[in-house]
Picture 1 (cartoon, rainbow, N blue to C red):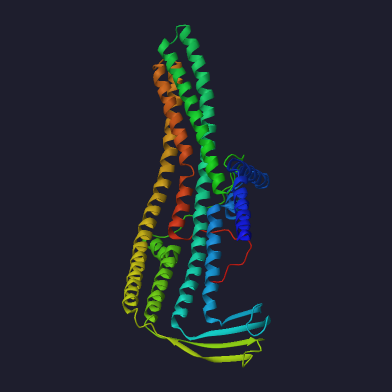
Picture 2: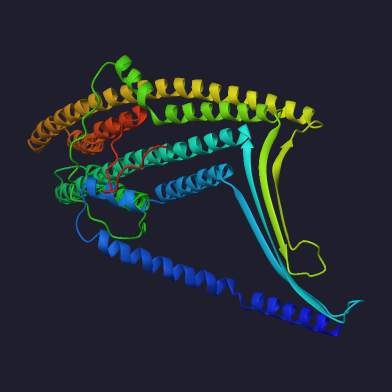
Length: 455
C-alpha cells in the first residue's frame, strides 16, 4: 500500500512539474521568433530579384498554405484508402507469456511459458468491397480537389499581381499629378497676389494640389495592403519587400460563343468531376448498407502451445469457418439503408445544383470579360478627350479668354480620367483569368513531379 502511494505521489509530482514548466508567453514568443525568422529566410531567397507573374505563381504553388493543406488532406485520404484495403488481408495475431506460481498446493513453485497464434480471413464479406471502393473514390476526389485549389490560387495570384501593378502605376500617376498641381498652384497664387487672378482662384488651385496629396497618401496606403495580399497568397510575410518586373506573359481569353464556353466547362470542370465522384460514393454506401442484411463468412486458424506439464496436450490447432448473421438489428439496418439512399439522392441534387452554378458563372465571367474590354477602350477615349480639353482650356485661360477656374476644372477632370485609365488597364486580363477558372481550364504550372495516377 505504501509503495502504491509513493508511486502515485511521484507521478503526480511529475505531472504537476510538467504543467508548471509551460510558460505560454515564452512559448508564444519563441514560436513567433522561429516563424518570423523562417519567413525572412524564405523571402531572402524568393524575393532576391524583381518577380514576373510566372515567378509569383511558381512561389505560390510551392508555399501557399491552402495548397499545402489540400496536399495533406490528399495524403490522409491515400492512407485511409490503404487502411480500407487491409480488410482483404488475413488478420494475424500472436501472443506469448510466462507464468510463475510461488504458492501451488501441489508444488511450492511452478514456472512455464505459453504462446498462441490466431489467423482470420474474411471469405464472404461484400461490404468490405464497397468500403474500399468508397475510400478509393474519396482519395481520387481529394486529388481533384487539390488540383482545383491550385487553379484558384493561380487566379488569386494573378489578380493580386495585376492589382499591385495597377496600384503602383496609380501612385506614379498621382505623384506626377501632385507635382504638377503644386507647381500650378504656386504659379496661380503668385499671379493672384499680383492681381492677375482672384484670390479664390489661387485657393482653388491650392485645394486641387492638396486633394492630389490626400489621394496620393491614400493610394500609398492601399499599395501596402495590396502588396501584403500578394505576399500572403505566395506564403510569404506580408511585411516583406517585393519588387515586380511587370512581365505578365500573355493571357488569351477563351474563344467561342457563350454556349460553346458553357458546354466546354460542363465537360471538364473539376467541381462537376468531384460531384460525379460524390454520387458514386453514395451508390457504394447504399450497396454497403444493403450488405448489412447479408450474412458474412470468415475462415479462422488458431494454434496454442504451452510448457505447462500438467496439461494433457502441449499443442492445440483449430481451424474452421464462422458465419455471422445479424438477426435482431433489422430495424437499424433498414433505417441505415434508407438513409444511404437519401444521401445518394442528396449528392445527385448537389451535382445538378453545381451544374447550374457553373453555367451561370461562365455566363457572368464572359459578360465581365466583354465589359472589361469595352471599359478599357472607353477609359482611353475619355482620357484622350479630357487631355485635349485641358490643353485647349489652359491655353485659352493663359490668354484671358476664359476664367481660370474652368481650366482648373478641366485639369481635375483630366487627372481623374488618367487614374481611371490606369485602373482599367489590366481589368481585361483579370477578367480573362476569371473566365478560365469559371470554366475550370486554368493552367497550373508543373513542379517537375510526375502527375499522380488516378486509382
